[in-house]
Image (cartoon, rainbow, N blue to C red; front, side, top):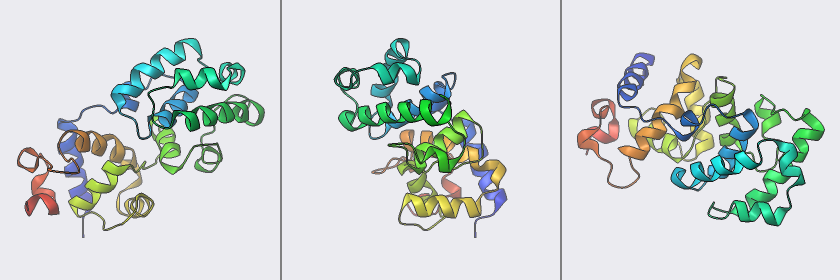
Length: 211
């Protein structure tokens, strides 16, 4: 069984080679902007999302601006983002709900965040971890894949991975999981042909030791 010391060691090694995630790079944005940014980034490359949202927020920085914005105009602004028609609708709807129900503020609980249109567990956990610095484990494809390759968990879905990682990892280290594993997954531990020969945590990895 993986020990807390082994997890801490892996995190320390990954920290030395850490490439900031998109949400770390853009951490000076408002909670609302971080929420919209995270929602828009789903199934879209960071290289597409980052310049688009920077331009978008210069024109429309707060929920009240999106409420007034015609849906067709917003769709045009989001063109290039994956599923932009659906995401434009969600941004409009959640902006209205934030104004009417939360006084224009982004809530800071998982239950309230996931009640917003288009906001699933991963997006909600990203906001908790990156915006409010609360203990949370956002599980995307990178976190799910790498945690299983390391041998920390044996799961089939991101939802199962989140639950298993919460049980395995000390709560004060939850905030490191997404931050460190996403960058590692984007640069070294890719889905196909991972670069195991240059991986800084290969000797701690079940998959790496057998490849």
